[in-house]
Image (tube, rainbow, N blue to C red):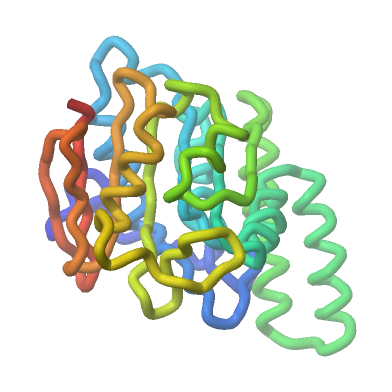
Length: 257
């Protein structure tokens, strides 16, 4: 897949999970360059009249929020608010720690942690993490001068509209980007806290996701769904507006009907 916007290869090692941002075993980070490409494609699809307006960005399957943190650091001035949710309690706890690193206070606390680790073990990886933290802290400090970036995080099953209604206002989301479960490191949940898979006789889970988030999308909202090749982002209330593949990932860009 040729990149249309994120055309240059950039060193994103400061963004790596497990360095400054937190990670857990079995939790994979979303590729930074692909996240950048997705956001810019979404921005390009917004109506010209609102394209320069900062967006409310929502990820209903946020995991550890690596995708959202990358986009915040790359496109801070284009984002008015970050909204994140996940059905898994462990993922929400991890996302809480990572989204806190989008603030000077959160980075200062992380510096204390890394400094203590470096003093105790003296590993080169800890020194590298501290250097990355310095660069990220300078970036966040400068970006915060433009405007603080508020975040909203909650636990919710993205296939359950009632869960989302408790936290989201109708038509409040401008851009929704979801890296949905593939079945290797993540899976769909029917009910929060349960590991059952969706009813095979019912609609596909991606259809359910699109159905569930639809009331919360603004009239001119744009959506990007990242899945494996076996899942299709199709729904009668959306119009297919293109797909592309990169490695094992399929990206669909449905438009509101």
